[in-house]
Length: 564
Image 1: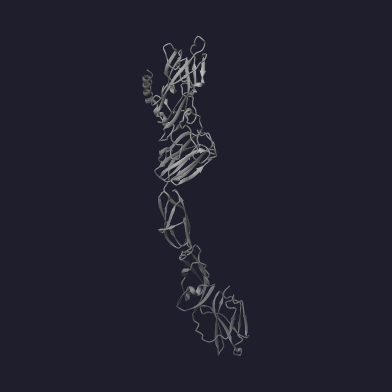
Image 2 (image 1 turned 90 degrees about the horizontal axis):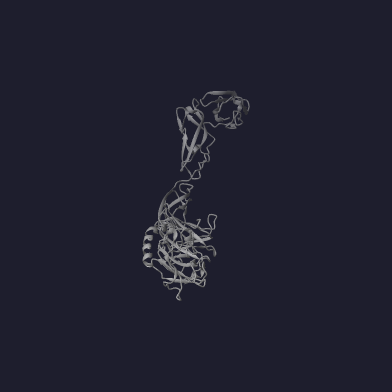
């Protein structure tokens, strides 16, 4: 009767409860080890003639099948309890996470010598199933409640917030407790597996490193396999593209000081103790596609419950970023520089410049030209960047012209000005490549002062200007004189006040002095009576003049410039 009854109820319960378990863990290989025990037994029936009773409870546990009956009996004066019944326990390993369990008892007050064997004379007989959570006779091994977290004894299996499992009968009752642990996760070569985590997804699990005392030999607590002195739990996950992976125990379910370590195919990648101002841990690392391992443990020897989550965000494409460029100082210089940083991707990076491998993300001694950077990251992702270096000269030429120059232009003619005639000491750090003179041609009609601008260019297009005043003397109506002057005008140029030294002439011949302007007009005429003549107050304007000293037997000339 017991077996048929329990099987019928089992199949009804199984159909209605399994889907709740997906809310607790995202572990793929989520098989569990468990142990059940009886914490306390109660008898509230009658007694024998001596006032004592011999309560007997035969128990059995269903998890995918019956484990087998165990018998508990004791002597007492009703109403009475027996915590000595705690030696009754059932254990199993490798069971499905969503497997369901049920508890059966057969109870009676024994009146025969074999107390565990029921006879028709035994009183207060009861047989039935425990009333578990949600008033069900079968519930999941890992029921979706914080009471059912791993690695601690949980006595809250029954309905109505009570630990007593047989609330439907007044004479008999028992408190059962359960503990469990994942079958996997206790060693680096036997990890709990989150499987493949897609970009944008998070997978998590609630677990515990607490110690728990058990009656069986089933592995029901985790051990220390390295790292800190505490017990540790191993996980693994897989990503199918380069991703930013964030592993965290910073959750409300975590109640102790944790320590996380992340391992890749080549060993330890990184580890973290405290993060975000907490005693919990977080690792954020960009990883290549592949499978990775996590060791979750306590700092030093700390133990407790924790929630671990793994979030995956697909990484943006690898890119060359933050280019730092120093352009060559001149068009033919080789002092240019290019340096860069990397965005995204996973180091170490392999760098290539113009197809040749380089050891670091920088190149110097570069000239003007176009270059190609190529980069591979540790995941094999590739990017390239073209860089063009132009002439970096931004210094304009130093334009330095002669202050002034005097020229004579015969009537009806012109003169083309040459840079060499106007330049004094112009220069450029990279060399002057072009000059423009404006105006570049002066005519005899431009007699007088002319501002001539010289614009200089270097190879980078930088420019500057300077100005020379060109004084043009138009030779009009004044015949060409071939004689030596025989006298000196100083200073020359002058500001309109000057001295004429005639000491080399024989002044007994009645010499006179004539001053012609650039148009050949006489602007001053005087007799010479001394060998040193000081002239001022002639109101001569700026320009070129010709002085003629003559007698009836001699004629001499000299040019001078007035410039104020």
